[in-house]
Image (cartoon, rainbow, N blue to C red; front, top):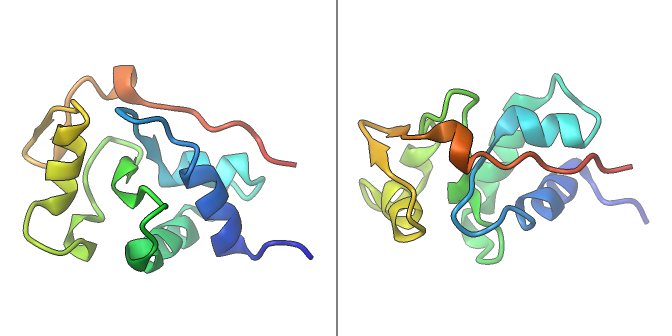
Length: 107
């Protein structure tokens, strides 16, 4: 049985290494659906009850914490990233290029 889109997003998200981030668009491209970054965002929003999906490691293409309002608490997303050594200033990941992880293309 083929996994639905959200499940496929979660498979990719689970691969994001500790201390790294990726973008909604990078996940969409890895899934072969490059124009579906917004749907990846919806999947991340729906992942808040899935402890094994590190949704805090998925940000927008500029390194902004655009999904932070979907986490419990005011700064939980930022705190989770900072716990992994990622520096965040004004909702922006510093040295974004250095902590960015590009997912492998899924077939």
